[in-house]
Length: 311
Image 1 (spheres, helix red, strand yellow):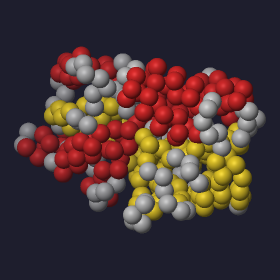
Image 2: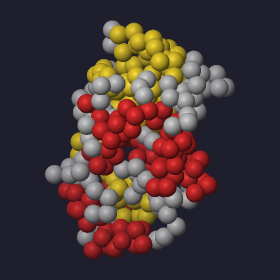
Image 3: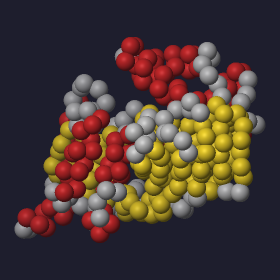
Image 4: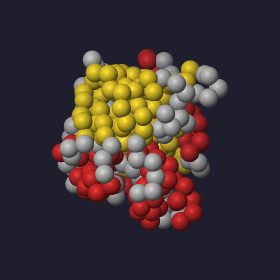
């Protein structure tokens, strides 16, 4: 096998550590070695290094790039792929070994965290499915026109706020679980609705909204019927409700029945235009972004990424 042929079959593995331990990394490498996978292994040191390392793997000619990480790392990977020419991107297949705080996109395909053997066996079969990407286009505080792609969802309002509180409390408390519980408790004393002016299909919505999820994927349970290859976005709007109903909604979210809540209003569309959403934070695939300035829009690009899926 010559060098170019080896590069075509050799995997580029990006490992994103979830903690300080190295046991997960060693287990992934052991499984790859047992299956005689030819691979090169790189490890991210920070969030900022993920895009740099994925870009390096793309430019070095790897045709299979596997992210051992969560939704945020996958988000970085697809944004890197969307920066290269289509003819280059179409030759690359993206895979995942779930190893993040949030693994919602992997969970959609029934790729479970911890079952590394099964994940690698599926990757070896190289079953490729072209998947959609959502895209948010906005103006930042420097008046620059920006865009960011997402595999899973964009959250606007309360859920993005909870994610921000979780990040802040985690830096103080250390524990992911404890920080989430404290964030939910703090939510009781926090702002519960936001004045929004939206356009979804032919509907103009101008009222107070608690939270909105726009999903190309399952949206952490908020857009459970979204399909990441139908060229459409699912939208869940939650209007203002009482605190007891909020906790009822959280229970439905956890049990997979979120759309059954009477304050949830679902839509399916190709584009959402947000004319105004004052003070509402925005998160993309679980990661907080800066609040856009002025109006912004969220659309979908159909079947633009090659993703490795199970049987």
